[in-house]
Length: 188
Image (cartoon, rainbow, N blue to C red):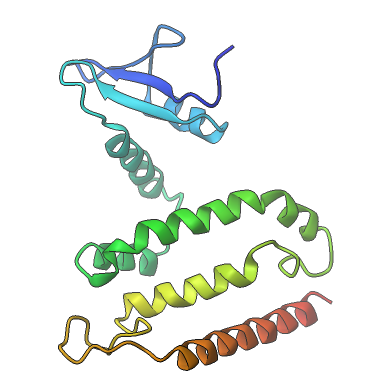
């Protein structure tokens, strides 16, 4: 049996065929997507050059699902991702996305338990932190990152005082609490 901690090595031949090194057979993109859905990480390597092609193929899998109408990424998120490649937010986007998906993975079982209860989101671990991160992400995407003016890269960028940052966080916490109250009332 294969070790789930070790990525499944897939080799791409010059013919562009993908070869599963564990089972010694050829696989398709859909096979690779299924490996990933079952929790297995994959690594796709070009046999001739040794280049890691994993990112390229994972993006291709996502694009194929999106083109078939299996839309997971709303247009505004896709627009924000495209913008992030040319903005000051580029450096924080990968960390934000990784943290968000990690929190979703870690909280999945708790979320499923809460779905059976009256208020499905109230007990999800990390929900408050995720909301604060989402707010920071939105600000970054619109050029209103804490500590910066509304025009990224302008000479008048200044550090935001610590008190203002704390007040801003308190406001976010209040908004989250209000939202949770509304969700709780809606589910009754």
